[in-house]
Image 1: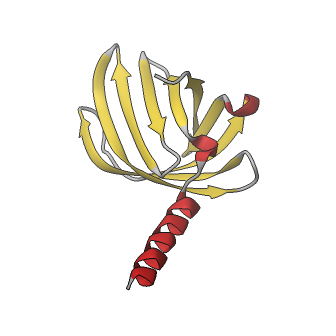
Image 2: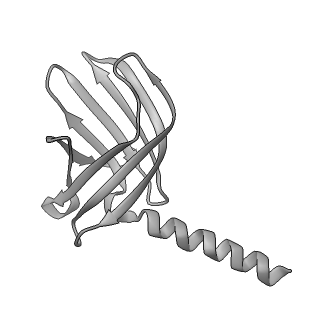
Length: 125
């Protein structure tokens, strides 16, 4: 019985590791057009959260999970799946982004639908 429990835990851990890793983990900040900014926290365990501000007012908060697929050391695809959210603007839905890490992992570029958001890594809070 103990062996099967340990095997199940190992399987869950291994599958979670395949979904995300530390390469995109951290606290990120992006300044967008029209006074919009996004603060995003990405954990190496596949958890993620974000807060969108417009003119210094919170207009959206989300948290959920993400899946990561590599296309080289510093690029790939991220799929953000919101689980909990509040939003005053737009619809909240799963988002698939192509990502590129630049400047030694200090810059994260997310591209979806032809639009690219540039995030800068922030010091730990």
